[in-house]
Image 1 (cartoon, rainbow, N blue to C red):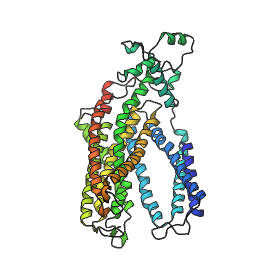
Image 2 (cartoon, helix red, strand yellow; image 1 turned 90 degrees about the vertical axis):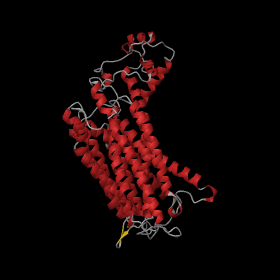
Image 3 (cartoon, one colour; image 1 turned 180 degrees about the vertical axis):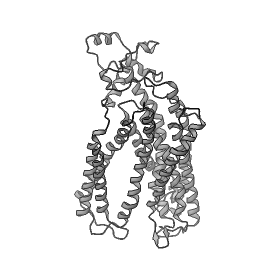
Image 4 (cartoon, helix red, strand yellow; image 1 turned 45 degrees about the horizontal axis):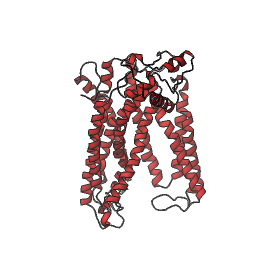
Length: 488
């Protein structure tokens, strides 16, 4: 993870230097009153290169740090297993506290045109994080990597296709497998055979040629794969429907940094002589995350565990993700209702429409609070679920699925806005989301998202009921069902 942090620091330092030396010209530009001048192609190229370096580093850093942190706990130990579950909540809380700092302190630097200082503060924060991480190096637990997951998946697919015409034995005990203590397992736990995706079992079928090659110790993994490797592919395939259902939620989450801000800018943003930056309203989301993490960990989870049978856990990850979708629907309905009232108090003939509605921006607090509450159930539950349900050695892949869901949510949101504007602007209409929101129907877009999320919830419930947990050697069926069951 040190290597992933280096591009982040390089990008931030490059961004700070370029901003100070030539991007922020004339001095003091970039605030709300003075725009900056034009820049050369080389300067713009350096700017984008710096940003992409930060994105590259974060792409490797974010999935790995969640996985690495979870690896520090032994889930077979009752005390450490409980601490591992708590880790994901506090990890997500830490991410939000960092966002609170950026939305307030760095947001103030942005409004005042102190861009270079803001970038230097960010670079300093990255350096401090690296130093803190290195300080604990000698105490960390480390696990051997299992190799490139893409090659392991490809081997199973190729081996199964090569044996597509063979007659499979009725008993799974006849399939090729290796002992859990085999050196090729790298200390990873053995996965038991399951009945789903039976076509892939052909990759573990032992043919006459395989027997001869095994005797000569020349057998290829592209022809014969152990059951555990086949089950790794099955685990990922079972996760994909659940993962796809989380993308629509990420579309809802994305609105907090885009349309919520646009909506807030068109509301009354002043209290006495103080102007509230619309983007700073996301602080209520962060406060909501902190509050609901505390309520879930200290109140709701123990209460549900007490109501359920003795010795069982509280809400499972799948149940929490479903609750997150329900709260996301409430957030969109709340935002739509606020927009309806904002339009009633708006000046539709305004030229510069910032603050054109007399409705206070604080009416946005409920929708931000709903988003924050939904994050605690959806994103924290998602981190726990993908970490628990991916095979040993592929935990980073599970965390990467969470981050990819957020990224795809941004793309789907942009695509959805483009489609809505294209359809709603036909016949020379202003559309649902025009530059002047007072002439549009942003409320209809919010209600559309609420409808899409409702459909997504229905599909998610079906997928969650269908889902079968990973079966690791040494774990009982009762423990597995208690971890991932969607039934109350």
